[in-house]
Image 1 (cartoon, chains in turn purple, blue):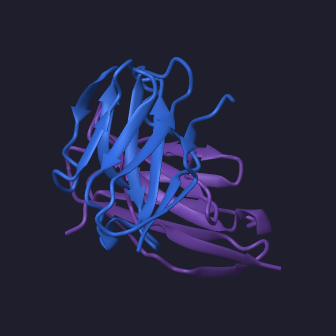
Image 2 (tube, helix red, strand yellow):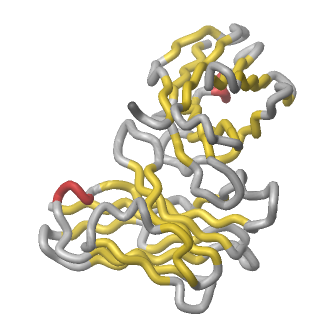
Length: 110
Length: 116
């Protein structure tokens, strides 16, 4: 079983839609969780960290369920500029390397 | 520049050749990571440096791969006897290494390696 699993998509949604991505991780010792965004042929960039209490940044909401080892990302009011691949990322703790999922591709259509 | 710089941006080589990929991290960042990314996949961890030493090299696929960071800044990833399966984008990232800052890796634009 892969350490971080995501539905690769693509998710094709109209502008203004709400879309949710899910991710599961296998290592119950994982302590740190993130969503990264990667535009086509570009490098990954941190979108947001994911906290146990859940967190929101504008149109983006991230949730963590430790019991189910499950992370989600919700995007409200999708914009064309949200089109990208969203990478679920997990780390055990401290300075252990980040483990990336394969990513979920989102296309927002006008 | 202020970001992570990688050279070359593109490298085409023949099977069996030796390749070096260079990474210049953000000034002051103590932690440096190498990942590689194949088409349709997420970045795959290779090796991580804290200062000059390799803190974790568990991701290096075999002994053809080696990386150094002799002065704790610039790093070089070295691939010997390249194989077609080594073709990928090699991404370098750095972070401040401070507690709580580990999650934000700043990636370079990558070195695209093609082995013919």
